[in-house]
Image (cartoon, rainbow, N blue to C red):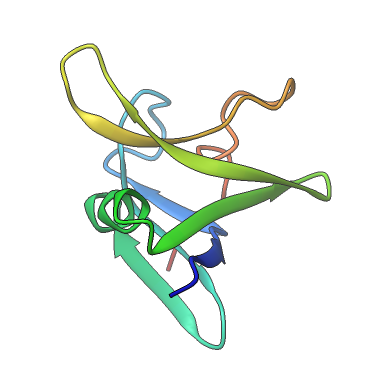
Amino acid sequence: MAVQQVQIKCINKSDRMNAWERITHVGGFTDRQWKITQEQAIKHIEASEWQFYVTVGGKSIWVIVAESRFGNKYLKTQADNGEANNLLSLPECP
């Protein structure tokens, strides 16, 4: 089965105004609106089921799984020599 490529267009954070708070959900629109937890997104990436990306300035940037120094997994975008917080700058999901 082919990996499904899915664009993330919005996020939810535990504290929207705090740049260091963690993302709780990611979402977007395909044929309908969708929203899943960060943990679900990580599982889809690690199982090679879905490949997420964001679009910044007309350029697609892949979302990858990273691990903090404390062993916590989280989502981030690959380095793109531009905006460091591509995911965090997305609008709030409904």
